[in-house]
Image (cartoon, rainbow, N blue to C red; front, side, top):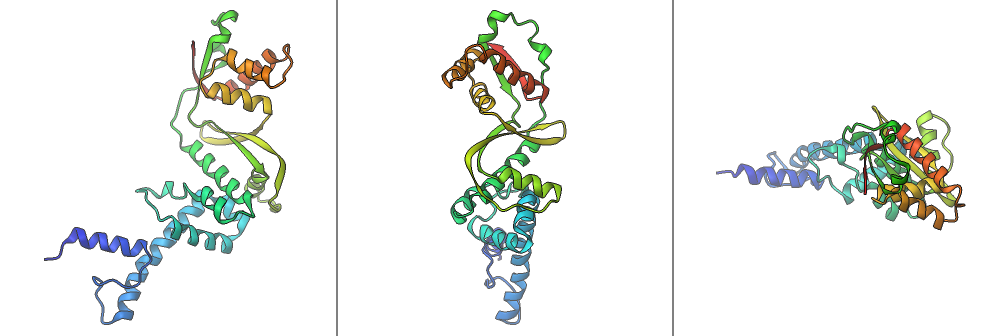
Length: 258
């Protein structure tokens, strides 16, 4: 009696491995059996390539269809899908590119940027607070404030012009050459309503965001700005300006007093 479960597992392994020969395939000869199995194996890899193109459309625009197809084929071989949903296929593409294409670091950063934006879009819906929610907090209690940010919000640091490449591809403009920047740039990625957004961050905003998103109090975040060399008189104003913008961007979903 044929063990159906075992047969299914063997079929799955053969297709995922791109095999062209398996004992369970029926046919009049080796070539016919290979062709039959090859149809399924090729269709499987083609579907995964489509998933990568869907998850990394701007990377595909930057590379061009032929280069992207070759890159996708190599990645599929190195990292076969382990997910029930192909929405999550490509989670290791950025790190893989960082090792496979070391001379083009903007490719890994572009892939990471796109993946983060996709994750921001898929993040759970959360009700954001308005700045008015802080109206009842006494001024002397502000140093004790802790904030909770939406799960879609992430800061990324880029050492290349990956964000510029992404924007050009999105606008359908001629794509610039990838390059390494002289200094790293900080970017904020998040979802607002039904749209994923991104924008650059100043060094002050990035430092304050990391502190508060990491669970530090408003007072501790201000102390970090002081340690970074910000003038004493400017720290409260700059920290408050960051908060005002985060509320406007609908990034803050809760706060509490330590």
